[in-house]
Length: 114
Image: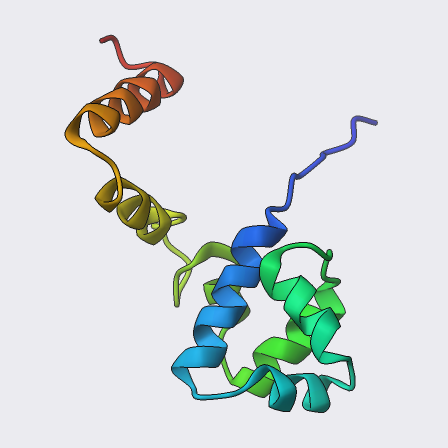
């Protein structure tokens, strides 16, 4: 039986946790206390330096009252906007020449003729 291997981007997950935490005005210290973990550990999760278990992610989502889909995919509900916000932020920081290069690379990966 073939194994399905999924690469999890812990950095993006951590960024989304931090974003939601800040939106709600929750400090790292308060969230760490509620999770019964150290602030240093929570900081590593938010930086993507530590892997996070599904159980721990569910605890965070419960405490922050946020759908797990928002943390995993960046969307409130299941849809096809995975990484749209991240791409928008990335493209905003790029010069027009870099945007064109990123666009051409994306078209090549998607199999669209240049």
